[in-house]
Image (cartoon, rainbow, N blue to C red; front, side, top):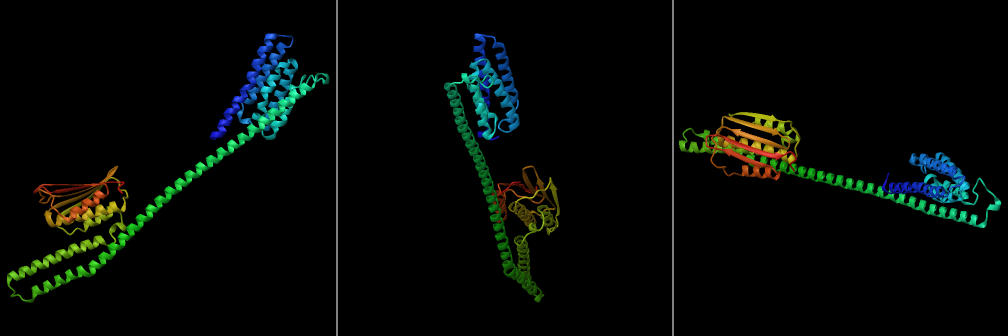
Length: 401
């Protein structure tokens, strides 16, 4: 039940108490005076109160809803009240107190004829001892005035009740519409953010593809040509001086190493493995394809869950950069990569038993790795000591942006 309807229901409950108050007030007066009909009048008054209680207080669901039960109630109340007026005219006050019940109990226009019937009880003599000689102009005027006043007030109150209920329902509908609009705006905002994110990822994807193609067609081809030319020059003349041969060999190895690094970078730039498989599978393939003699293991703990594209890319790049550093600097025999899915965070550990170091060496790779992780509200910790290996720990929230 809405707010306005609940308030009107509460007001109707107050109206239902008015007949009790009138019966008690008149009953006390009748008892104080006392006459031959006092006992019968008090008995009828008690019966009227019980009748009113059973039909009204015990069955509020019938008010203005069940015509037949409320018609029975009002008919019985009219008979009892007219008997009271016939026994003692002072009970007319009780009839006046009963008028509002026509509009509380009976639906629609039925309240008006009910009030008219009830008004006849205010005519001197009432319904049951009607005597034309006892009816005078004052009695008619009193009855007509009471009926007209009650009908007018009932019409006004019912009209205001209906308007209040209508406005209450309209306010409820407006509030529901506002909630739906708010939900729709929230959904639109979420959809817009998803579209922007998809467009951004698509742009990054296309730019990486373009850049990878250009590097492959230019720098990679050039390095491959340099390696080929150096190998050819080295094989031309066995009489070439040893220092020259050594320099050619160094240049050849350097070009070949850079070509390997370039191809690794091209692999990272092209549509990466994350677009075709999960993070766990992508890391496993990266570890298995690592071109190094050291024994390497990959371990996953916890239940894997999907992360944002940025988070998965950051973790994959961290493994690639770390393994590249191990290849170049660590001289390790064993390497362990562990990916742990915790309740709130994802932790990546990369450990090796290589030569270690005193201070973290400067380098673009580690700097880029740290910046990428910190953009995701994560952290990077590096622990190392000479001849004690190196431990790299990356932590990012599972809800990383």
